[in-house]
Length: 268
Image 1 (tube, rainbow, N blue to C red):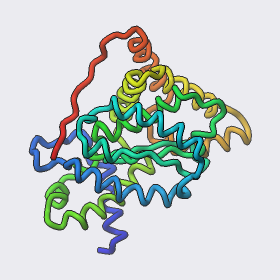
Image 2: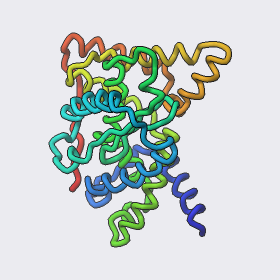
Image 3: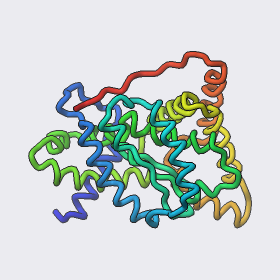
Image 4: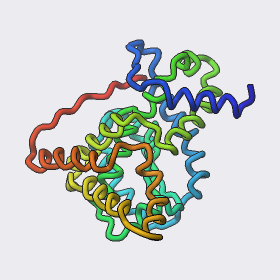
């Protein structure tokens, strides 16, 4: 079987195996080191796919400041190795998107940052969503759900396996093939992170409302925005549903009501 064929087969597996299938066997789970290695493999592909780094010191400083506030209130923040691996980079593409890979490497695109009047609250909302994917092990869950792959990940051929799986994981992230429930969970915790960090919990909701208006626009403007938004909204739950859920959560957070949270296991 050629390398391309292997990648194709693994891609089918990572997209199709139910994410709910979680093993109680500790050995079957990715360790923090595994997550960091997977993220590093995927990050190199993300950079190539999205035009490399965008050099804008002012925007980088803005994003970095928000990012640091968010990760200090995120899940698993007590894990020094993971916390120390969290970084944020700007990508030079007009596509409106952001993503965080296992291990915490996070990307924000030029297209998102160049949205008219993008507020810090909105940016914190979308970055909180992405950080939640990494902090709550969503990418790791995707890999762990591939039946039969756990042994390979933990075997002596770990480096080779992680290299290949990292490329598959990058494909999955680039195409946003995550379970809708995990997307809702990332919305939920991302808003909680934003609120804990001192930003308005409405930020993600108002950004979704802006996206919804852009999607419904007409003519050439609609076509241009549709292309730019495709990576952020394709294969995600319906925007209207996310607005509905997000609005309800934002109201609770603004009233300082206690909201349900669950801890994330740490595997070393």
